[in-house]
Length: 385
Length: 235
Image: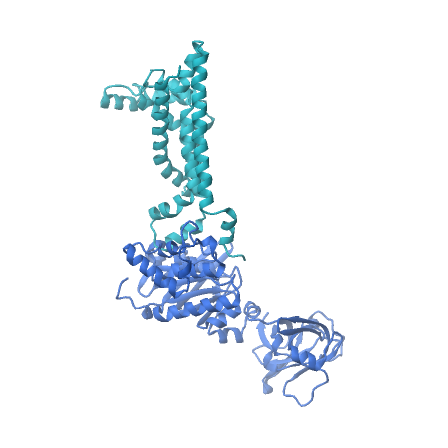
């Protein structure tokens, strides 16, 4: 490998435009050494983007470079062949060679070395990924997590200048996932190359850290740290991905600039379900929520996202709370999911609320119980409709 | 009773033809499997022609092409001093054309069935197309390659019309087993005809048994189809 190469000064720059039928990819970003997460629903263009970087797809326009090495530049008609890009790419179904052993798979990309050096390098990366005991097995004889490690080792042993991972852990159980992420992070502490990591799993985004780029229909709609992107989503796709169990259409009813808040009526009012003259905070009609102030006008249509874990439940009307939204409702159903209880509460609209097992015991909740929902103003996340 | 000379000649012809077809057929099949040229179907149609064409038609045109009135025939004559028609070389050329689809089609079909993602994976690991071909495409196409080789061999062993048109019936040069059997029947030597026919039958059966047996052993030693499916992570 060339010694002059300093990965810390070789960020991946991507500016790519590609039309495939009715789908248009159009984005531009720079990925520094470390993890850059491409986040988005399926069909958002994440894989197309990776294929452009790898050279499997040729963009219609744009420029792709790692450091000062240009891989693609439409204006100069530069298009380096896939085999010469030195890009590591683990595609979603791995594509391990079924007729080769694990070791042969890992050695495959090391053509320029002597066979002794090849073997040495392959063994050292197999050890790093804790799969050296599998070296004589065929890919058909090992587990999903092991295959994943083999695919990573095979891509990394060639010392690529940038690494592309397309939902590499989607099919794995959480503990195995966490182990592999640790191994990968450890590997990259030594190598420090830009890694584009495609996922649609929120857990993986949080586990990996780094920078997040959110794609929707081929465009970047948000980017920042996982915290920034997931906490303050403005777009609904982000919201669903960010784990808002409750998303409602709403209309701005009144604006109180002096208090920094506004009142929004949830979707039932839009459909006319609320009887005229009735106030919103009653169980029969659709609730009105006090939300943070954003740039909007009375009558503006918005969407409100509330996490099920951000809602409090009380069995009697609470007094003296700072929370501004206290809404009466009735428990519709209680369902145990792993170590939490998921309660559906009808308060004019149906809201999902998460409780601990202990809380359910203490409150003695059952379907039909009358409850009060407590929602802080700042737990109401506003999005464009 | 048994015309060993004809038998040897037939095997010689089949070996030479299937060996040449293997070498010529691989790149042609590779091109057919992977080219994106819009007029590719024309080439595919030409390759498949010998399957539907009567051997006499094919033999007739080969004879014309090899004769001393065609450019090819004249060139060969100026080079060697004799014509291609009614020689073993002429027979080989005719047989190659006649058996071409039996080699190329199984080759191309097995190349096409190799998962394209494996080809991408190979390129992503820095492999040239040639390395990808020999390290990935060929090993994963072995059954198709064996089948193509076996079919072109067997098909040449049993050909009749093209041999008769191009080679005639010269003992030791162009008289193959099938021509010999025809001759014996014409001369009412049914016992000889039967001996030769039985010999050809048994030989061809043995060759095919051996090849299909090999194919089976090969398939078992690599991967069963169930293992194949297990390879891609369930979504």
